[in-house]
Amino acid sequence: MTASNSNSKRILEIIDLHVKVEEKEILKGVNLTINAGEVHAIMGRNGSGKSTLSYTVMGHPRYKVTGGQMLYKGQEISEMSPDERCKLGISLAFQYPVAISGVSVSNFLRKITNSKRGKEIPVKEFRQELKAAMAKLGVKDEFLSRYVNDGFSGGEKKRLEILQLSLLKPSLAVLDETDSGLDIDALKTVSEGVNALASDETAILLITHYQRMLDYVKPDFVHVFQDGKIVTSGGKELALELESRGYDWVTSEPAAEPAKI
Picture 1 (tube, helix red, strand yellow):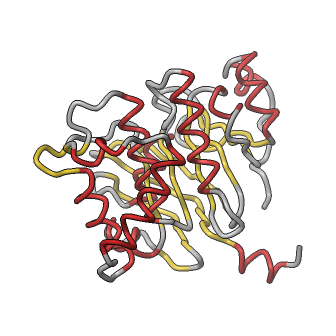
Picture 2: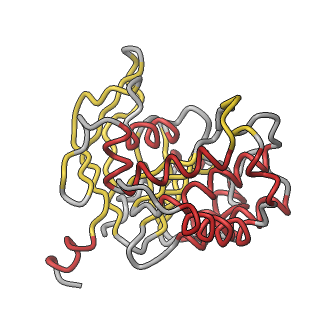
């Protein structure tokens, strides 16, 4: 691949990123490049900075960038609001989706889809698209009349997160521990939804504690987070090694260079 072709496919480039939360430095020099069509998995212990990376990419105001760059398709996004980033093509599936009482799933999905696309989608057209996406995720019709995440099980919340991504059609989908709280059947269903998002034009950044989701969503690259930075990178076999050996060996052995994309 030539340099020009590589740059044209580049979705996200993070360069020496430093981030503070309430004056505590969490990210301490993250470097990561993600191209279109790639699935990158971030793994690591609790408190290593994985979720901080996801919220920072999406623009959560609590997470302050103090150094480095975040380039989305070559454009610096550090000062952009979350809705501006969403309209550009970045979306985040939360680890702990919040409930919105009084707002039906149907109205919520139509509102966010219209906002993302910058136009009113005809009701009939939207319903057809929504029904097709629901069928892929095994979501029943009565789901639409319920209030957003109100009384939802863990699996239902995660299905709704993936359903949102299916409608928003992001170029960069960030999934923050989407596998947490899922039984094996829900995990398979949600993973199928994640795989359906994958395309030559879409990049996926998948943050997880465990290898089990990577049995269903095959990563091109696996990166290990520790103390606010990537300490080693590899292919999908690295996730299997982490599952069998844990994380201690990562610090006890010489650090590998992050994958060069």
